[in-house]
Image (cartoon, rainbow, N blue to C red; front, top):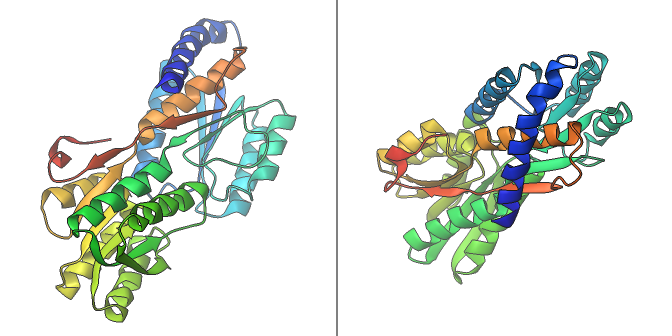
Length: 304
């Protein structure tokens, strides 16, 4: 709580200071590179960034890496040539992007990692409590299974948030000695890929009772596979995407998603970048954003 209050206090101060400062200076230029924009989660983050930038009269440059770290590095190089003041970085590869972070810092650009952290001299990281998200989803699933049965994990790309979700899930499952994790397979966080992966899971493990997906995109593919099989398999996930929330309201296999708040992440990230830019002496190195369980009891009232 103290860290969250500090973050928002810094954010408020930064935003109040930024507007008059920019009025006397050149127009602030913000670059943001996303790991992907074929995902409602990151689309909503981009929308919030555009709204915030408009409010402070800043220019925004946005790029989509398409999960290609080489492209993301090239995109950052292009943005640096265009003279950005702030780089908001949503890395597609936390380690692989380090050279881009270093390049940005060599040009005195403020670098804030958003949603997933990055190696190198990042000024601040703002991201969800991903381990908590995985833990809460799998705890929920275990409870709905009565603490017993075979379960599987539908994994994703090897960035820190996904690894932490899996770690949290396994911790929750480990608290239930009668639950057996029979397989972990990679659905690439993609609906079509996940559909095929889960169809094979169901065939290979006829007693499968539950599946945890590391994101809602994969979960929607898993849901289609479960419904096609006609089996009673409980599905949980992480994200809180509108499509997933709608599926939960309808009942059936998809019983829970632990929601994150992409709009809040980028708003706080930008505010902290401004705090760095305008000379704040104490800015948090990392700011965790809380997550929330969304199930049939509260899904109708939830949105990003």
